[in-house]
Length: 79
Image (cartoon, rainbow, N blue to C red):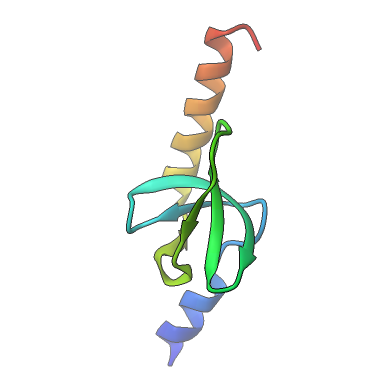
């Protein structure tokens, strides 16, 4: 029972970083329509649909790594 409760609490909300474990991609949760979760790459780009059960919150290490990658990419282009 606790395991089920934990998984519901870790569901990322709109605007949060999350991982689509089926595709191995990290993105921002943009919304939910029908039975899908719409996600967008962190640096922008084309959204993709993910199965809600495959969208999980990032670990602290994954989130830090993803945010650092964005900062590093921005510094290369002078942002």
